[in-house]
Amino acid sequence: IGRQPNNANASVVLMDLKKGIYTAKVTGKNSATGGSIVAINQVVTTTEKPHLRNISTNGALQSNGMTAGFILTDPGRYAILAEGANGLDPILELTGQFVENGQIQNLPTQTSDDWNPAIGTELQQIIGRQPNAATAGALILDLKPGIYNAKITGKNGATGSGIIAVTQTRPATP
Image (cartoon, rainbow, N blue to C red; front, side, top):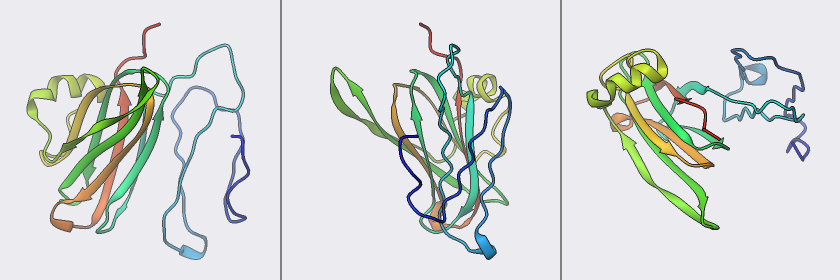
């Protein structure tokens, strides 16, 4: 990854992964709470180009929300879904930066409070189901390679549990 962990408390796992579904779970030592980062990096270059179809995170939403950052190396059509648990009404906000014509461009902020049923058919094709509730936030966007942040907050400052999922509908064409 090109650097050492930023402190002695960081955990690192180096392993070969085959195609499949994986879960990384982070818990605080002695039940401590706070923020954490899970990063997945391709260390060894193979002849096969890697393709990450979906990445998601779930966790506790405090009054300041929860953010999932992701880096896209391929352009494509992506679904970004935010769902709440136990009646939490999530609001989804997507921001990002990408390079176009040698210049850094900012993605205009995209938001979704309650997902739009007009995208229901495409959303069903991408993620294989409808959102769990009408209050879920969902966006379907053509995104360029870049650095993005999806943030979920509870409506009216509500707290609870939430999920942010990013799914690519199709690999980029060469």
